[in-house]
Amino acid sequence: MGSEAIMHNGGCHCKRVRWKVRAPPSVVTWQCNCSDCSMRGNIHFVVPSSDFELDEDSRKFLTTYTFGTHTAKHIFCNVCGITSFYIPRSNPDGVAVTFRCVDRGTLKHVEIRQFDGQDWESEFDRTGISAFSKVDPKKSG
Image 1 (cartoon, helix red, strand yellow):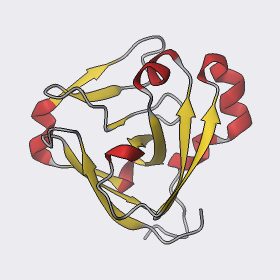
Image 2 (cartoon, helix red, strand yellow; image 1 turned 60 degrees about the vertical axis):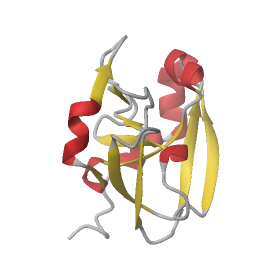
Image 3 (cartoon, helix red, strand yellow; image 1 turned 60 degrees about the horizontal axis):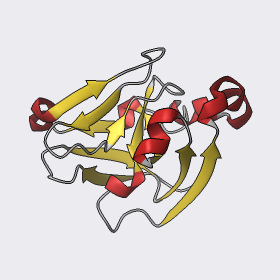
Protein backbone atom coordinates (compact mmCIF):
# COMPACT_ATOMS: atom_id res chain seq x y z
CA MET A 1 0.00 0.00 0.00
CA GLY A 2 2.92 2.29 -0.61
CA SER A 3 4.25 2.75 2.94
CA GLU A 4 7.75 2.00 4.14
CA ALA A 5 7.95 -1.34 5.90
CA ILE A 6 8.37 -1.46 9.66
CA MET A 7 8.80 -4.31 12.13
CA HIS A 8 5.62 -5.72 13.69
CA ASN A 9 5.64 -8.22 16.56
CA GLY A 10 2.98 -10.80 17.18
CA GLY A 11 2.05 -14.33 18.08
CA CYS A 12 -0.56 -16.60 19.55
CA HIS A 13 -2.94 -16.17 22.49
CA CYS A 14 -0.77 -17.92 25.11
CA LYS A 15 2.36 -16.12 23.82
CA ARG A 16 4.37 -19.32 23.40
CA VAL A 17 4.51 -18.65 19.64
CA ARG A 18 6.14 -15.29 18.92
CA TRP A 19 7.40 -13.77 15.67
CA LYS A 20 8.41 -10.58 13.90
CA VAL A 21 7.23 -9.54 10.46
CA ARG A 22 8.43 -6.72 8.24
CA ALA A 23 5.45 -5.03 6.56
CA PRO A 24 4.04 -1.55 6.03
CA PRO A 25 1.84 -0.01 8.74
CA SER A 26 -0.99 -0.21 6.17
CA VAL A 27 -1.67 -3.69 4.80
CA VAL A 28 -3.96 -5.46 2.36
CA THR A 29 -5.56 -8.47 4.02
CA TRP A 30 -7.52 -11.37 2.59
CA GLN A 31 -10.71 -12.85 3.98
CA CYS A 32 -11.07 -16.27 2.42
CA ASN A 33 -14.13 -18.50 2.36
CA CYS A 34 -12.33 -21.81 1.77
CA SER A 35 -13.26 -24.68 4.08
CA ASP A 36 -10.44 -23.95 6.55
CA CYS A 37 -10.34 -20.12 6.61
CA SER A 38 -14.12 -19.77 6.86
CA MET A 39 -14.25 -22.06 9.90
CA ARG A 40 -11.41 -20.18 11.61
CA GLY A 41 -12.60 -16.72 10.58
CA ASN A 42 -9.08 -16.00 9.42
CA ILE A 43 -8.12 -12.69 7.81
CA HIS A 44 -4.46 -12.47 6.83
CA PHE A 45 -1.87 -10.44 4.95
CA VAL A 46 0.91 -12.03 2.92
CA VAL A 47 4.61 -11.22 3.05
CA PRO A 48 7.71 -12.76 1.45
CA SER A 49 9.11 -15.49 3.72
CA SER A 50 12.31 -13.44 4.07
CA ASP A 51 10.26 -10.75 5.88
CA PHE A 52 9.05 -13.16 8.57
CA GLU A 53 11.12 -14.34 11.54
CA LEU A 54 9.86 -16.95 13.98
CA ASP A 55 11.39 -16.85 17.47
CA GLU A 56 13.47 -20.00 17.82
CA ASP A 57 11.86 -20.96 21.17
CA SER A 58 8.44 -21.02 19.47
CA ARG A 59 9.16 -23.98 17.19
CA LYS A 60 8.48 -26.59 19.88
CA PHE A 61 4.92 -25.29 20.28
CA LEU A 62 3.92 -25.56 16.61
CA THR A 63 1.76 -28.17 14.91
CA THR A 64 1.06 -28.27 11.17
CA TYR A 65 -2.13 -29.44 9.46
CA THR A 66 -2.46 -29.97 5.69
CA PHE A 67 -5.23 -31.25 3.43
CA GLY A 68 -6.20 -31.29 -0.25
CA THR A 69 -3.11 -30.39 -2.31
CA HIS A 70 -0.96 -30.24 0.89
CA THR A 71 0.58 -27.01 -0.42
CA ALA A 72 -0.83 -24.88 2.39
CA LYS A 73 0.74 -25.49 5.78
CA HIS A 74 -1.79 -24.53 8.45
CA ILE A 75 0.51 -23.94 11.41
CA PHE A 76 -0.96 -23.43 14.87
CA CYS A 77 0.07 -23.31 18.51
CA ASN A 78 -0.29 -26.74 20.10
CA VAL A 79 -1.11 -25.12 23.46
CA CYS A 80 -3.79 -22.48 22.69
CA GLY A 81 -4.72 -23.55 19.13
CA ILE A 82 -4.29 -20.14 17.49
CA THR A 83 -3.10 -19.93 13.88
CA SER A 84 -1.12 -16.68 14.03
CA PHE A 85 0.62 -17.40 10.71
CA TYR A 86 0.73 -20.11 8.06
CA ILE A 87 2.04 -20.92 4.59
CA PRO A 88 -0.82 -20.30 2.14
CA ARG A 89 -1.55 -22.33 -0.98
CA SER A 90 -1.69 -19.07 -2.95
CA ASN A 91 1.80 -18.03 -1.79
CA PRO A 92 3.93 -21.05 -0.87
CA ASP A 93 6.98 -18.78 -1.10
CA GLY A 94 5.53 -16.47 1.54
CA VAL A 95 3.87 -16.33 4.93
CA ALA A 96 0.27 -15.38 5.70
CA VAL A 97 0.05 -13.45 8.95
CA THR A 98 -3.25 -13.30 10.82
CA PHE A 99 -3.62 -9.56 11.22
CA ARG A 100 -5.43 -9.82 14.56
CA CYS A 101 -2.36 -11.62 15.96
CA VAL A 102 -0.13 -8.57 15.39
CA ASP A 103 0.58 -6.79 18.69
CA ARG A 104 -1.37 -3.56 19.04
CA GLY A 105 0.09 -0.26 17.97
CA THR A 106 1.94 -0.82 14.69
CA LEU A 107 -0.83 -1.58 12.17
CA LYS A 108 -2.42 1.75 11.25
CA HIS A 109 -4.73 0.70 8.40
CA VAL A 110 -6.10 -2.66 7.29
CA GLU A 111 -7.83 -3.06 3.93
CA ILE A 112 -9.88 -6.28 3.80
CA ARG A 113 -10.30 -7.90 0.38
CA GLN A 114 -12.41 -10.97 -0.31
CA PHE A 115 -10.89 -14.18 -1.69
CA ASP A 116 -13.33 -16.80 -3.00
CA GLY A 117 -11.49 -19.89 -1.83
CA GLN A 118 -14.46 -22.06 -2.81
CA ASP A 119 -13.52 -21.27 -6.44
CA TRP A 120 -9.79 -21.20 -5.72
CA GLU A 121 -8.29 -21.57 -9.21
CA SER A 122 -10.20 -18.73 -10.89
CA GLU A 123 -9.90 -16.49 -7.82
CA PHE A 124 -6.12 -17.02 -7.69
CA ASP A 125 -5.80 -15.70 -11.24
CA ARG A 126 -8.31 -12.86 -10.74
CA THR A 127 -6.86 -11.36 -7.53
CA GLY A 128 -3.12 -11.36 -8.23
CA ILE A 129 -2.56 -12.55 -4.66
CA SER A 130 0.63 -14.41 -5.64
CA ALA A 131 2.42 -11.07 -6.10
CA PHE A 132 2.14 -10.28 -2.38
CA SER A 133 4.90 -12.77 -1.46
CA LYS A 134 7.38 -11.51 -4.04
CA VAL A 135 10.38 -9.50 -2.85
CA ASP A 136 10.42 -5.97 -4.22
CA PRO A 137 13.82 -5.67 -5.98
CA LYS A 138 13.93 -1.95 -5.16
CA LYS A 139 13.85 -2.78 -1.44
CA SER A 140 16.26 -5.73 -1.37
CA GLY A 141 19.93 -5.29 -0.78
